[in-house]
Amino acid sequence: MIKFTLRCAADHEFEGWFRDNASFEEQAAKGVLTCPVCGDAKVAKSIMAPSIRTSESAQAARAEQRARMATLMQQLKAAHEHVEKNFENVGERFAEEARAIHYGEKEKRDIFGQTTAEEAKSLHDEGVTFSFLPPLPKVDA
Image (cartoon, rainbow, N blue to C red; front, top):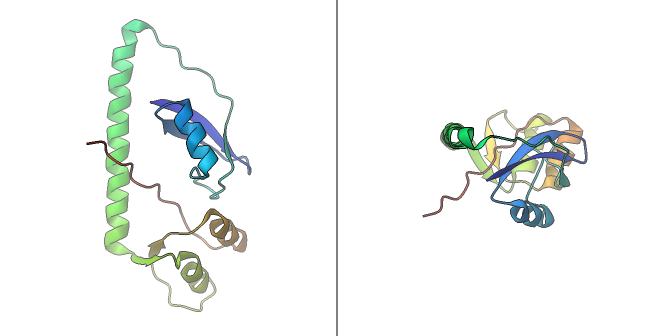
């Protein structure tokens, strides 16, 4: 795995983990990488300082990295479970429902669903409050 510092067109900086550089390039070309702040799909690698480790500490660093990733995956899974249990799934109508709730046309309630990056940007521009929940990674069998 390789960690890249990424930046969207709106200059939000965040990190992403990829199997290799080719995986990043493929995902970026498909537009599946989105900024967790604004949903922008125009994501590029940012300048970052390399992390250089000695061979003696490499094994300990890998173990620490695996432990951090395991904790992160547990937290992400718990967040998904909480949302699925406590929020209403509105599916592809997310932008429409969020907008209606924001403008008082529908009763305020917790919802989740899917939307396009373009719709997310439009919601953001209108001041509609929402968050992105990264998808759970597929687990290799």
